[in-house]
Image (cartoon, rainbow over all chains, first blue to last red; front, side, top):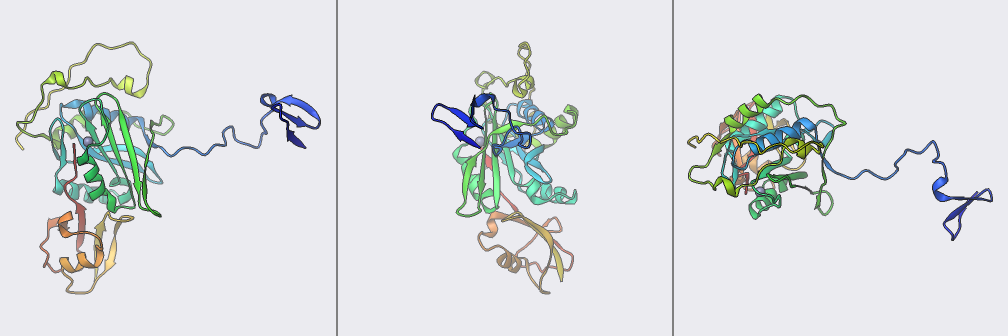
Length: 242
Length: 72
Ligand SMILES: [Zn+2]
């Protein structure tokens, strides 16, 4: 027999005790609130995304690979061959088709490999441009659902889910690095090889280096508490003909 | 006859489907894509670019993949 009184106390078997001292029933979980929908990255996938964001001086883009059975958990970030500038990224159409074929050959489902579109921004803003919005609508609007993710050089990030169910709609998603999932070690040599194989810089399109933001360190981005490191040297993108 | 058909629209589709003998690429597109133009897709048969009048053969792998994925 339990009744809440106007004084903020609960009458329990006629004994008044302050609400906060009531023991939590053992049968209930510690948190009963429904978990928020969020986009999660494994630490390895997030580290790879930041490594590729910061490797050169251009934007880069790719697809997030979702875990089977947990489509809002990104376990990898995969580049496709693309032509980039400091402020643009354009995937090669044939390379996108090859990517679909390769992923299907690996036994993955399309919803795992083709729904999370990720690209970087050179400055501090992760806000989508009108080009981003047009692509998100035209290309990804035909799917039941898709997520656009933008990670800015300065550390800001943006994720938005769009979906077709019911009247359709879109929803900003919090973005989180999930340290509770199994994850593999970093492989910077392989990430570098992937970058050099996929990213071509658009000739004649560059900004002075000092107009670009200084990327946050990986430790900062992952939230580690550590002493500030000296400014690191930015990797220079080899200028390859398109 | 059966072909492997791949298209990311809707829920995403990558499976074998039954089509009539003599079906062309353009006919398959009109049968399968209700809301879109051929120019919105790269259409390939067995990983090669396909002409609209190309006739499909048993076991072909036909993919409709998006084009012009661009950000800024
Ligand atoms: Zn953008």
